[in-house]
Image 1: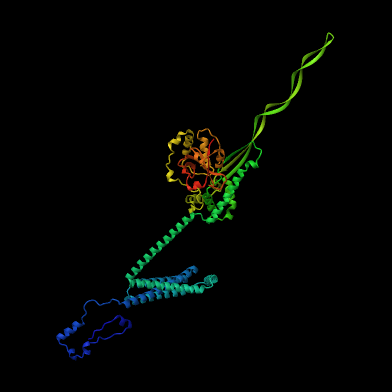
Image 2: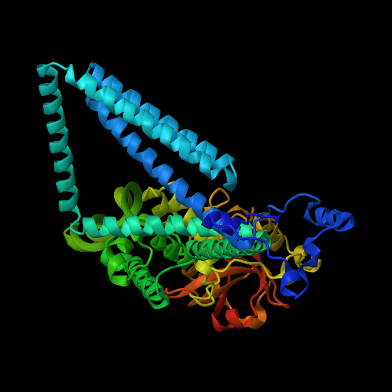
Length: 598
């Protein structure tokens, strides 16, 4: 008896093959068909199978199995979606009738059958595929039964219910058609877009299936791909962080910088200096423009400003500004910074005046007369008082009006404009930051000593030679002046409460050092006019040293107090108040003269 066996391919094709005895084709005799006991035993042993039959799938068989599973899943999903759509429509329009209930029951049966098919399809192997057919037939039969039940219920519906359902369905169809037309009107390429979308979704589904198959067939390759993806994401995040960091650095740089063009910043500064020059000319012509006063008194602050404060304020207000854009604002800032007032004061005073008048005086004169004495004429001498007028002067005390013109110039600094303009908190923070960084352009205004703060390390711990302090007058000045070392330069400042500018510092020291001087508040040029000129070879501690051209003004523009004439050291209100050499290239270029307090 010949042994038969099934292969998977043969089972698929439903064909059988007989096992061919190789001995026959080898040309052996047919004598072996006549079996004795030993040959019969050997024949039986050849027909007995040992071990377990190999039911493992080949690579091609496994791939085909996965393909069939995918097709089955897609078919199940499609059927389930159709069933859900039918149920949704039916529930929306359903009435209380047996036909609707039957249809719902049928749909439920279909869904249950589909769920059962999907559950069994995922759990069973390829060898159980045949049993799914019976499950599918059961589900179809259930749906068919539901349909028949629905038809039976439908036949029992009343005419009114049928008419109502028909109207509801017609209305829903009309609404669906209107929505469809509106959608197509809003998108002229609706059909094409839908087709492309469907194709894209289908393509994505295929790609997902292919990716899943690739993961199952090449797990190691998938691990490598995931690792590469992680590296790419890390690098991308790092680059994004660097980009954000660069953006942050760029934003920080902009926040601390003057954003206008350098030439525009300098031109605006020149325009503001022109306003200050006009103010200085007005102060210089006070007596010419206001004649007839018995006395002219002046209390004048320095006419100067910190150019970095002006640039910072305009940057906050306008950002990238041009000279033409800020002209009106310059005048506004100028008006907040400077206050010039002239006040007339009339006092009633007394004075001695000399006057002239005629005065009658009498003097005695001797005259000769004649008289008869005993009949004879005799001469005699007599005295007579003769009046005469003399034009004489005399003094008298009289009251009169004493007219005084007091002129005061106050420099409130650009900070007064900053306060008056009501900047927001963010603007104030930006303004402060720009001043601290000087707009990242510290050299834009040249070597302005007021705008560039700092103390030379050489003079941070400077001590005045003791021999100079033996002069009591200078010692008093020095004791008062050194109290304010480190105070900042403040335009218009003239007291410890406000800090000082250069002339305000000198004025305060001289008037408060205890030497009995009271000159009031004078400018640098005012102090030049109030002191006696001293030759450079005769300078001593306590004399004043004057400079010109440190900012745009006529005459002396800066003043300091000499403390060491040999080494040419002064104490002055730079930025801040400090000891400094006046023999540097900068100060030599601006040297003017020396003055001694009288």
